Image (cartoon, rainbow, N blue to C red; front, side, top):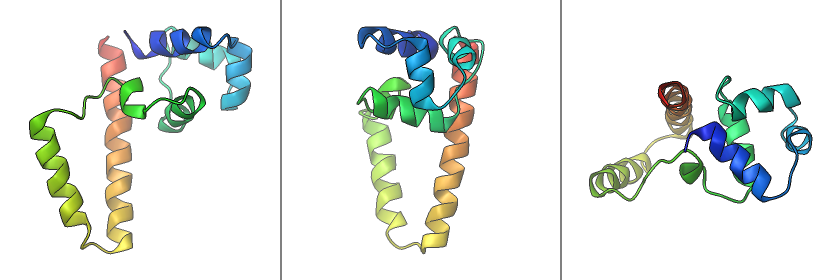
Length: 112
């Protein structure tokens, strides 16, 4: 299921109108409509808010599987080594990951 379709499905399953969800997200209803139809891309902030509103994990919203064995090892390595970094370095890594995730969402929603 494409991202926009998933958002629409979640909204409808909770009996929420586009107008109501747009108000919750503090965005224009037309923008939400474009997101649901795949004509516009949601920002990472909007995605985070959608996940919170519907009480779902952001990874499941984006269909990102974190259970794969090789990824688990990579994540363990990153977490183990980040313990030794300064806060400013961690902030930099978080910014890089955020940008990469936004690009991932953009690319993958354009492909579908």
